[in-house]
Length: 214
Image 1 (cartoon, one colour):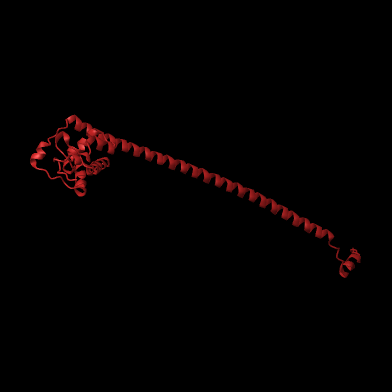
Image 2 (cartoon, rainbow, N blue to C red):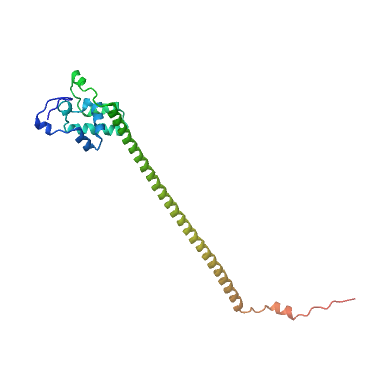
C-alpha cells in the first residue's frame, strides 16, 4: 500500500485496509481525543490516506501511535518523542500548502483534554508503581520478621539444649566423684593390717625409765 503523508488520493480497496482514529484508539486502549492529539502533535510521522474528514490510517500508523504513547507514558518530552520517531519511522513528505490545510482543527478544550488524559495515565502508573513498591516492602518486612523470629527460636532452643547438657554433665561429674570416693573408702576398709616391725614391738615392750630424784 502506498500513502502520501498527510493527504492523498486512494482507491476503494486501499481505503478498506485502513483504520480510523477510533479503531486505532481501540487497539491501543486510549481515548480518541488522546490519539487525535498525538496525530496533530506528531503529524510529520503519522501516515495518512485520504483528505479531510475522510482521512484514514494504514496499519503502520498503529506502531507510530504506540511509540508516541509509550514515550510520553515513560516521562519523555515531546522533543524526545520526536527524536525517537525520527530514528524509527520515515518522515512524511508534505508541502507548505498541505501543512497550512491541516490547521489545528481540534478545539483547545480537546487538546487540553488529551494532555490531561496523558497526565492522568502517568499519574495512575506512578500510583501503581508506588503501591507495588509498598507491597514489596511489606513482603520484605514480613520475611525479615519471620527470619528474626526463626533465629530467635533457634537461639533459645540451642541455649536450652546447652543448659540441659551442662546440668547433665555436672550431675555426671558429681556421681563420678562420689563413686571414686566410695571405692577408695571400700579399699581402705578391706586392706589387711600391716605387721609391726621389731623395733615397734621392742619399743612398746620397754617400760619407761623412772626419773631419779636426788
